[in-house]
Length: 121
Image (cartoon, rainbow, N blue to C red; front, side, top):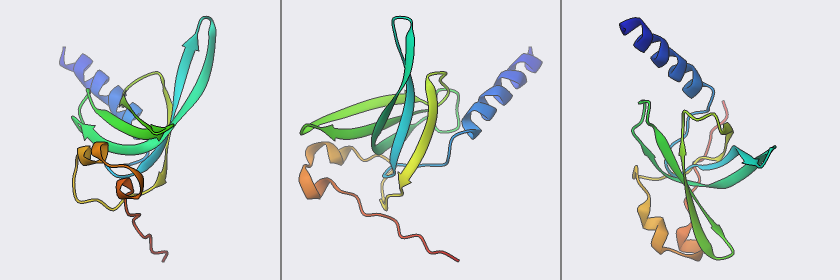
């Protein structure tokens, strides 16, 4: 039985390693497989990561928030999912919190997150 658990944990570790490292405050572009009838297509969901839950476990999820037509839209994605095609990190945010629920009540410029400055060596 323990060999089966080790095999499953290794499989999940491989699935998790194909995605880049990101955290709350980062702007990401998530490519998701959508099945409509017998057709399958890839839909992109671009927004700010407001939380990561159960990090480094099999039930790890992350929540992405975007504003579409002045309406806030949040979507929760499980890391280990066959519907996730890829995750692109577009910008790294400079935040001090792990969960950014305060962004829900903000609008306009006050809802923006400072960008982390990368120094090239």
